[in-house]
Image 1 (cartoon, rainbow, N blue to C red):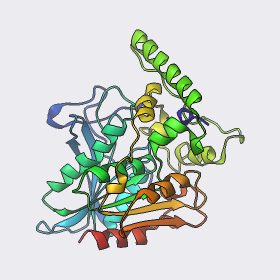
Image 2 (spheres, rainbow, N blue to C red; image 1 turned 90 degrees about the vertical axis):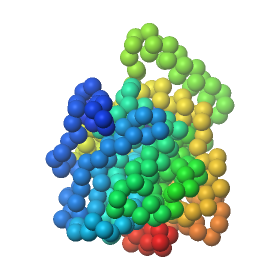
Image 3 (cartoon, one colour; image 1 turned 60 degrees about the vertical axis):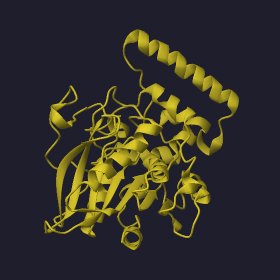
Image 4 (cartoon, rainbow, N blue to C red; image 1 turned 120 degrees about the vertical axis):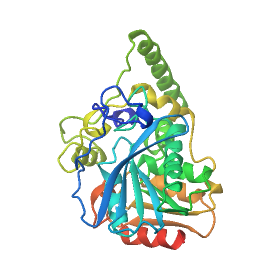
Length: 347
């Protein structure tokens, strides 16, 4: 199956930017609790926004342990993903749970999606999405209750790959967790299990560049196919798993690409041509790679781990888990291990 059949974005574009700059469809971020998980009474949460190095304003939810005194400085984590999701879904669940365990956490929407700014909408970029993590580190490093020497990041699904890419560049990141990761540049260029050959990839590039011509002519951006609105039962199991999370009350969110929209078709071009993880072997700080035993994407995590060097890198395979189990199943996501990892390496 081609990646474009999975690349699905926010049809609702509510987002707030700093300094009065705002996306045209809405001037306010949602203030009510609209997450797909239950609110915890052990943390406080507030809306925040911050700019990345390209001038795009990112929207985030900042979670803090209850009753944190003003003079206390805590370790902090920036969290994003999955690819095509919003902070009200899996990244928010991770952020809230880890805030319950004593961290300041920031779940954010990537550029061009959710409540974050950026035009056109529904665009992905290996460079800008890597930068988004560093922008979150910028914000956390300057927060008065964050210890700037104790900052980690956590990437889920496609943002696992971008998190590793950020960790290879940004030495302020002291510990990185990637959960059920994809390398979006690899799967875009090579297909699943590296099944796309040079001839097929060239044909894909021809089609995408022809679409660029048409997009310019029409003044609009064609949309890539997304998840089906209904299942026939003939889809691959992992597509059914995505559907059962994104398209049902379990994980549906109106601003989520995978729930209620589509990526721009031509987003795939930069992902095809600009591979990430070229410098991941140079990561000196700690990394934990978490993947499900039965995940269709497991090879991304295992291959990424093979490139890492040093004795502070770990691979954890969760028995029986598939790809999406690590989005929402709190009894499957190894939060005890993740907490221990961060506390051991952010000290």
